[in-house]
Length: 279
Ligand code: HH2
Image 1 (cartoon, helix red, strand yellow):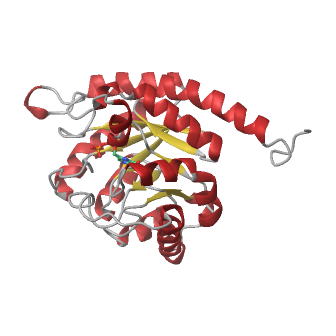
Image 2 (image 1 turned 180 degrees about the horizontal axis):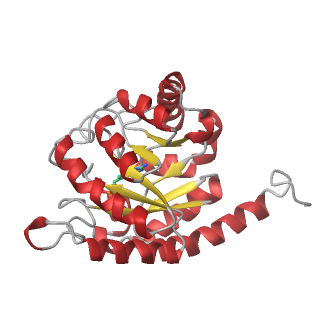
């Protein structure tokens, strides 16, 4: 069970934008390192550093700007902490700079659809690659949402992303799939994907990461604003883990670790034969 902690270095992320920016918009490295250390102490296995918001309607960020946001932060984190680092980017050049700076995973929410060259970078550099599901682009993804069997369709499109990665030379051991909770999906789709993550995992044939943390479907269910959705996020993560998720991407690591511990124990108790334990 892997817990991925979110560190957004953006001014406009939907729940934590500007958290690590000081006066004039410059990176507050001290605040970032403190938050990162807390996440690791609380049980994060990976820290995911992002320099571009992918919320619906977020403004575009140039490659140079995105690199300027993530590379110095990754370098400082790599020096200070003994934890795996991931870069949340859709762009090959940003991925390359982030890997130079100390990241070992690339988290591409577009599943190689935005910049197919990213697969070659991950292959050449021996990096892990998280393939997200996203139809279209973040700016427009909530406009035309049509699914029949959402689990089967998302699995099919993730299989196509995985095939691109394999063709570029990324082996399965370094791949993970993500159904893209909140990316071009409405409430029923997000719920079906979380509840059906075990089936998705079998159809795709790769470990599955889910990222429901603080997303708007939780606000639809609870009425809470983004900053008050951690309890709801932990409930969603716990169910997904119970149903077969291998990793969760979260803003609140301490709470997620506790929820994951219980969900994981329940999953093992429910599937003794599959886990190789006596019934
Ligand atoms: N969600 C967000 C960003 N990156 N990566 C993966 N693999 N899965 C996700 O569900 C996912 C992701 C959006 O959340 P956040 O980073 O908090 O917001 P923003 O995109 O506004 O920076």
